[in-house]
Every structure is written in C-alpha cells, then in structure tokens.
Length: 114
Image 1: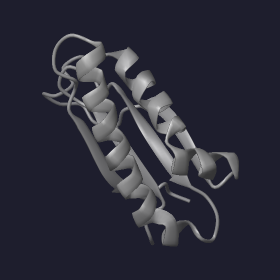
Image 2 (image 1 turned 45 degrees about the vertical axis):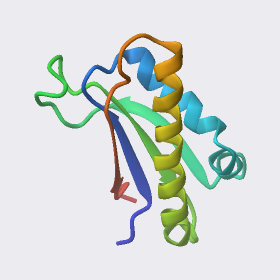
Image 3 (image 1 turned 45 degrees about the horizontal axis):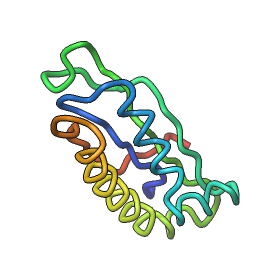
C-alpha cells in the first residue's frame, strides 16, 4: 500500500504549546492550506504512539497529515517535502521568538490504515 500519511513527532525539549504552534504553522503553508481547503488533506493532532527517552513523560503529542482521495499516493512525495520544509522554517522561526533551542522534530511516512 502506498503511503498516504505523514507523522510529525516532536522530541527532545518539546512542550505542548510547541505541538500546537507547529500544527498551526503547517496549516498556513500555502500548498498544505490549498490541499486542506479542497478536502484532500487532513491535519490532526493526536496522542503519540511511542514512548522512550526522548519523551520521558509518556508518548506526548504528534501531528498526522493524511492525504485523502484516489490521487493521494501521487501527491505524497510533494507533500512530504513541503512538510519537511515547513518544519525547518518553523524551527528557525522558533529560535527567534522563544528562548532555547527548538525541539527536535521527526518527519516520517506512515500508512494511515485506510
């Protein structure tokens, strides 16, 4: 099955507000916003699926971007690159608006189970 979802997980040093801020940032990325407005992309915040040393208080939160529709696999690579670019821009911006280093962010393809 082709990838139709992208998991964005904040690690080391992430706060709950970081997850919401990154989600809002990604929602405003032009290409992602266009796909959301056309109903071809959902951006959801959810409880994380993995616990470990990077998230000592539990699994934390993550952001799932789910492509919808028959053309989703064809769009995947373009959206994946846009998400990675958006995450880099958000981390750079966060360095200027808050103290300390921004959290590490993992961006990975994932099947959404549909």
